Length: 398
Image (cartoon, rainbow, N blue to C red):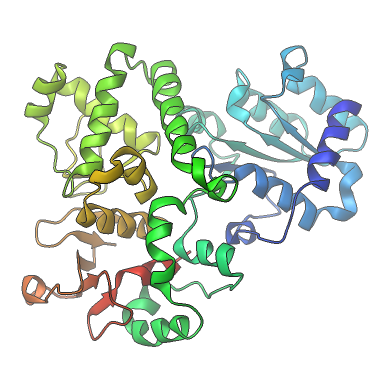
């Protein structure tokens, strides 16, 4: 116990609060059990430590941070640690990498029930593990999801300027004023293309030259370890799944022909549809459907994107399709707070209300002329006009 507390204090001392992500302000401090889920490398550990430092600096003696990937837990149980911690006056427990602990969901459920005065915050990098445990923790845990950096957050990291978060309604109604305010302070295109390639994951700052290699390792870990162990994907098919991701990265964008794909990969249709579903669950792809409700594991997606543009440039390298990059960026930034669906008339239907067509600076209104609440989202423009809006501006939504 003393060893864990010492390591906890060392972690806190080495944690900077110079740059803090806005999701920290959304966390309900009164909740007794809080989960933070997100892909590997997204910054969950840093968020935990910053939360402690900013909110509990006067209660460090009642606070403990532990990471369950620590070898210490090979010979000690989490339940015993919690019992000892509470007996010594502990009130705030922060558990990192919770999915590394066997039976973690049931253990957290027991902790919640047995220690009513203890507040617990946990993180998990394995999205599949969190999904598996959802039923066990229902009605108990308040779970928040972290994405990578928005373009706004990336600019804050690079320039130190904390730009205002813009809602979708603000952008649609006042995009010219919003773009003007931002352009008075920075030139978006000085940063935008770099962000698309290597600005989504916070670890881009650590060793920029090795960024794509590190991201490739994250992808491989997800595919080679998590999919086989948690979804039963056969190891023999992992290379086929990687090939599928490369196809998605290079497409314009990817509209799956399941019959042809299943023949090419040499697996049956139902298994292929399951794999497409798993890739979305695990946070590597985003599947679009005509209807948002009632999506099943065996339902064919209408379109498939990678989860973010950095994945495109890692998997496709020099063969990234610019149309795919644009649509992937838009889908990624909008999905954080909005429902996205496929529509045959335009590229995206948002919240069952707004239609968006994505393109370059010469994209015209011809395709959407008769569609109500429709907009052209254009790359390579600093300012928009009427229903033509700059693509980069949607990177300010969180």
